Image (tube, rainbow, N blue to C red; front, side, top):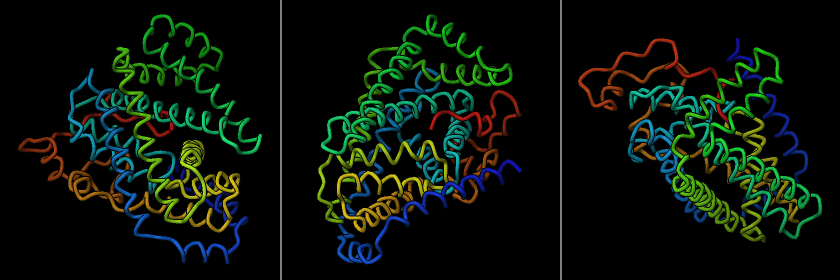
Length: 356
């Protein structure tokens, strides 16, 4: 029943945003934009997308290091499998798949793994909010966009202070958070406390200022690399805007995906991308074609190495285990390891997942 409700919720979100996306288009302009695009150039930008995820995998390895040392090469397929799952399922289920797979492969508590993923995604969210705030505030666009930029920049500063305080001074920050949590009804407060516990365990690695700085640099670098992909695709569609506009598109579209959890992000991504480009006077047909192509390129088949180490999108369901032959290969043993019993080592339900 819960799975069915998630499906219908995601479908409704997709339909609403696609309706907004299509309603403000001119089909003659769309035809011209698609006809004149340089698709070879657009495809050449795809490797940058996967390079960005490689950098984020390095960051995740840092976050995991206090509890388990795992090579970037072993974590990268897990990250891509989570990405593939998010491309076909709503509510960011891919993050739970990441926690499950790394827990199975590395004999690690799924709850602990999920805590590091929550922190990992928090870094992404903060970086995107920072980009959105800075670019929007400094851009030459209308006052509304600048207002959004100033608001998000202030939000970024506040959220960053909370994160750094919780990471570097957990003994001081935790009592304050507990008092705030107690303002909620008891059942909800318990769930929030559980999320904070999981999140705090994921913060162990960044209690070192050096590691925190490396993680922050990796976050900015990965999104700048992905922003370069957006820029090259824009050149393929002959968009006459600067690199900073693509960073605004990148930040706005990905933050929209974190709020509106539709299957594969279809609908929110296109509508947000189009809205940002239209605010910079990009013709509606070009904005439509760019949004469709940029999102489509992110749904291309994964590299062969990821498929060899993972499982197909059709079998990625929470609680379902990889086949014995695959688990045997990944765990490096002569027999598949038995599945853990339900308890603290199990992946929490989707409603308890980390941000974004």
